[in-house]
Length: 542
Image (cartoon, rainbow, N blue to C red; front, top):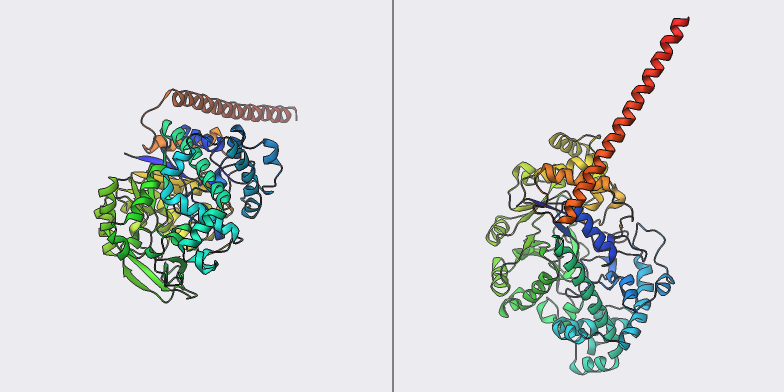
């Protein structure tokens, strides 16, 4: 069934406290999606961010980002006061996330909430901790230890705790009990607020799409607690790391630096860690996008210590057997495979065998370095079509910076013109395509240029910062999106009373707008007529 959605991360929502959260603005965005006849809301990974503020480099694959905990909801719960929330600085620009300011001020404030939390512990808190114990215990201890080591990476800790000596672990658990409970509380609050948001969205017919990076960060509870699953030496240093080889886009390739999985070890226990990971994420989301899907077929290994990705080799991954094992244990999950980049026949076969929809990026269609797979007339139905993702410039940003011949090709192919808006013409290409699902970014809907870009790959600083202004969405934008959904058959099939009322309001406002335009045109014509009469009378007198 044809449908549509919008990509915007939680961090990009408006908020008076420095970053988007899971509170009322998230619910307002869900309401906007309903009014705009959307079915999906896609976000980036919601895990805690680490060095570089990237959601793709996290301290845990299972934990939620404490920054997303809504402070106003904590005030309603009696854990904070509005005065306390306003007593901290959260940055001076409402269109940017100031991560340095967040790191400095958010946790002291949340510690105040922790003190009150301990006075009235919710009845379901212990049940939550027990249910999530298979990852929560290690994560909370890991974060408490990081605080005790001034934020240093676990690879720099003293040998006993770095190597997880049982005595050292027990000693840390006993000495850091209060800090461990603090990090557990944050996860309880996050999961509770996330569950409430998901319930709100699902009841209104909005499905949430989450994102699972293939790799995990070296400085993470995942690696520290499960070293045997990764290519590490006896001192827990990486042997090889992840990346991509040189190509037409980068002469040095991409050096990601993530530790690589020991797929042979994982296979022996039935891929238990991956099964747990997808089981947890599939509870949080209705659909899961798996990043770098081709890495499961074969992956690029770079010797640790290399400064670029030039020296590396391709190695065989687990292939379709991993996903067959996961399906056997969890049932058929709703998964999107991120199959962008250089694809081999074996990758294409793995995607076909999985039955998952792949991704088509319309910006790639007009890049002379790509083949014709990304041109809309070559799309299959079983795919998700994007104008761009978090790693691309906005449409208008791309138009301003791409080679002139590429832009000229896009304009000719999609019949773009300034009156419609170049970005709206490209989105029209996404919505009109045969792909079952079409996703566009909020930045493109808001007509933003390169200043709305979320991330520039292989760079640090000034990424993941964009935020939407509080009054950015209006009824004119909603009406325009709705008209495109109706035109290309991507609107929601069933409407509740709320949507029917919204339909009537929007139609009335559109009619009023047209009436005002007609009145303005009539007044202009009347003025011209009066001017012509006055001119004629003047000539007649002469």
